[in-house]
Image (tube, rainbow, N blue to C red; front, side):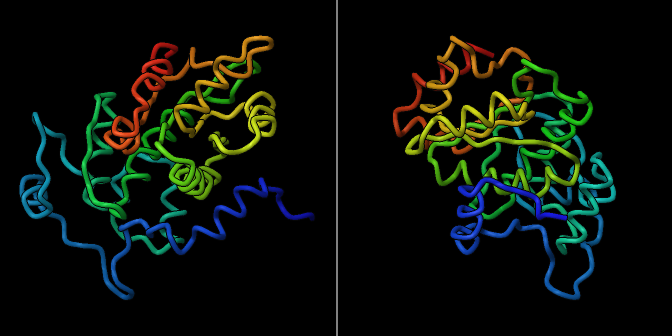
Length: 239
């Protein structure tokens, strides 16, 4: 059978950025076993986790994570043995529908920390219908970061049949418009400026945020520092 087709731009992004994208901090050293389970308080103390209010118990093992078994198999196949601290604590909070502000270092697994709860919500929704906009939206400050998020969204979303599209400036709108209008993605990753450009197209409309139930502002402080507050507010007004 012919190989599965993928956007040449995403293929290039995955190839050229593979060395630059930090591996998710999930895997123990080769030959190591999963860490011993601790009490929630002990785990949080050991990992330096603090919250503004009472937190649900962290998910210390993938076996305890409330995700599709196909996703858990994908993690096992990738050699990951346990969630990173930010994933362990952010997953159970996000799954309650509460807002989360999570702060962690680069390479700590934040991307999968926010993608997997989105995947759970998307798979529960069922197939996307014609004219339906994305169920989840991730905004990032730069094209490079948006592409990195898209690589991870494809890497694990493919395991559960989740279609995602990445839109950003500095590239022609046409192919991105085509992927949005014909592809019916349930997850969209994009930069604030390009998202506004596409949402402004009304004749005919390309997509909408009427059904979007899950929003991520990745590196939100950086987006504000770069002056994207008006564009972010414009997108939020359409949710």
